[in-house]
Image 1 (cartoon, rainbow, N blue to C red):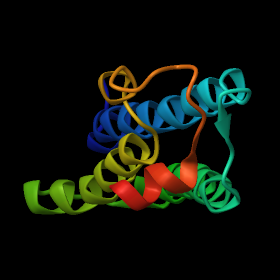
Image 2: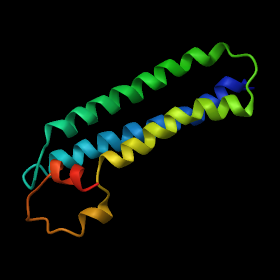
Image 3: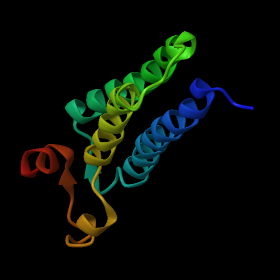
Image 4: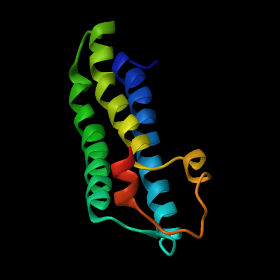
Length: 117
């Protein structure tokens, strides 16, 4: 039988893994489209920063394993950081719906995307 930490850590790990997946998928899309899009150095720093923060958040979560009693409020408190990180990973890259509005032959820069948001 799973204890409370193991049960909660599954959900936290899934949320963090979804964020990491979005960041890595976005980097892959960015590298595939590098002929049509210029890579902005600030965007690259944000990508690296967010990915490192996602890994650190997962690593730090292990410190909660000795917590004896888990309340709903503690669960929500611990869930806030992974949720914000996941949302940040979604905001860091354009979605497919936003990219279909522009012609694929017209070069765009990540600086333009960042300033339009």
